[in-house]
Length: 254
Image 1 (cartoon, helix red, strand yellow):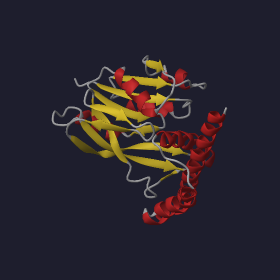
Image 2 (tube, rainbow, N blue to C red):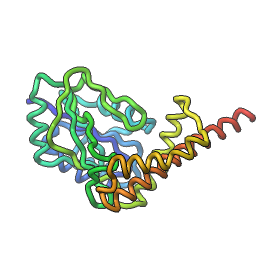
Image 3 (tube, rainbow, N blue to C red):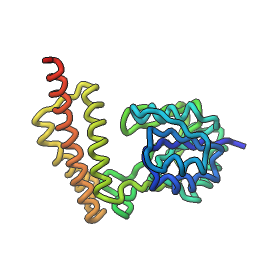
């Protein structure tokens, strides 16, 4: 029997984690959870499904997921976010996929749900990445918006996993504050710096690209709201680049 390890990283996911775990409990040989300090009932709920729960202080997404990978003993790895679930059809497809000898990784598409509806455009679809791969042939790279690099042949599954991304604008704005800080710091490390030109084009380039070029208007009012908020997201990132530079200058003067 081919063994499948399911990897999940968590932080305060009590509202989502049960749905996620229920969707994979029948196909997982083991469930590996790496938590970065949840203060809600995430761990309490997770303990009903697995004993393999580890704590690791968060530094970046790839490091968290590679840590989960190291703790896995299965021949195949399925990576899920705590706010995701898989359908019964995809579960059956995964069972068959991991029996293949001619492939080391599988692309799986993701249906992103925003404010109660699947987003089919606006650069949130198609959202297709490698989330199923053979252990020893794949590794996570990238501090933010991490990806799996697979050594060997890859194929694509027809099923999609379901991502319950943001059910409220409040959740989206909380994400914006968190992610823009991480992205700005990552860009600064790469040598990117603030400029007035970047600030001026950040919003219109993001909004026009999503709403018009990526046909966000076909997602109705949600497409407009998403395009607008992602424009703000990008503009905030540029401003935070400026903040990081100012803090470094102040430290140098001391």
